[in-house]
Image (cartoon, rainbow, N blue to C red; front, side):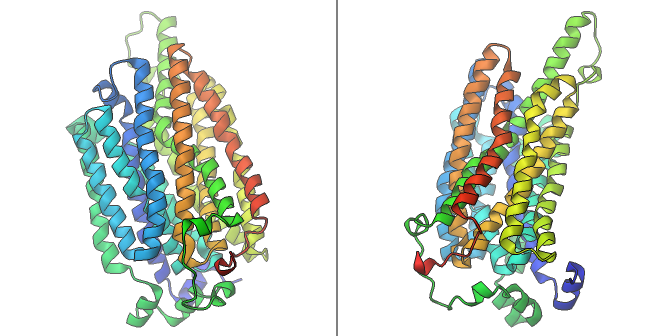
Length: 469
């Protein structure tokens, strides 16, 4: 079987330039999204979430929910808009919107105003994944889509790695407001490259920037070749939700997207809490201790730990796209390869069931289990995104991705509220680690449940003919 390097040498590699653009957009997306979780304690100390200790957890979850409600609504709208106006314009509109909203956080100093800007960010950020998924469907054949998706989706991890390394420092040096302003401004730079580089494969072929061989490879899927040009039926949400395969994607996203969001918004607080408990236990046993908290056994640098988790997740995202490609190159059909890979990635997150207990022994053990779970999530995500383009024609990919993203955001709302209520309850009892233990049970088991439901609804991830639906 010809290697990827040999194939690129023979036909060209312009499609990977397009993948790189999507990667950087996704990196920026998650850089902006992560700032809130990293500054949770700073914002709490500044009074943004109120004065009451227990109420702060609930107010924080309310701000998170504002993002997720708007993200859900935005996902429903974004998929339709991007399928209608096209990938280039749709992606640009989305990024302009979320960069402005990210900067707007600097002007919010209460729970209500933060909730407003968080909602604006959620609504506009919703365009990223429908646009990214549509871009990959337009520029890659099915055999490469999971790998390309894994590569661009690893941008989410890179954004999550960069954020804890720079955001706390910006906040400590210039104030938390500048952390939102500077990270939000980065997205505007991406637009220059997007407008200069991106166009459809047909347009790039016409200008000579894309070879005929690479163009033919991009359009080499027989089932997509058989669809008559210009015969696509009018797409509506009602039409799509009558299809079983749409529900397979929707339910898969509903059950698993919220888990990633939980880690995104609560992982820094969990690790900070583990540090606080170890400091309290040590100072209680050593009343005369006057040294630094960082020197106490078991205390770790939580920003560094967060960066470690997302670094590991980056490799998971890439591996998640590579594994089904490996199966396909070994002779397995696309459907079976995708399903087997997803099953493997559904089982690995069960490791997080041990996070709370291992954290009592050593916080780095908890970090290790969470890193495995987050890595598996990104591998799962690379494949579940690709199921939309496996099953649906290109003109429907953004719309289906939007429906799934909306479902994932609704699931995220439920998990955020459950997390807020659980942690508020156990914080009042001074046993917040019990609340995290319950949440980790939910996080660990969601993927296996999702895999079985998706298997029942779409046993082979077979292509859907919208004209027959």
